[in-house]
Image (cartoon, rainbow, N blue to C red; front, side, top):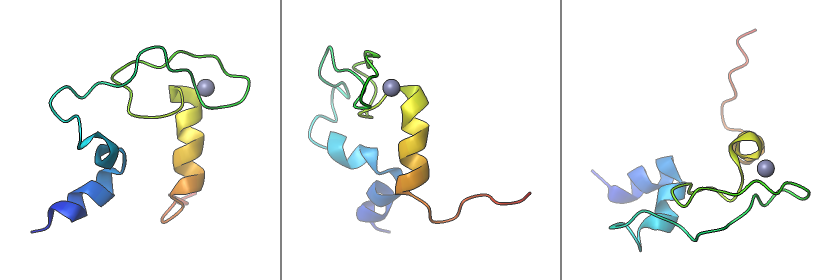
Length: 69
Ligand SMILES: [Zn+2]
């Protein structure tokens, strides 16, 4: 039983451990992707919008990409 294990699995949760009570983020943040001005929700733990978030996860965690086909 290790809490660090869970944090690693979730990833973004690690950043929220400080403000676990609220679980919200700065207002008015925009997607970190250059050229993208999508405003992120304060509940969005990511630095990017939903569209670009997928790209980050894909390139940042290429442990076991589902290459079934
Ligand atoms: Zn974006």
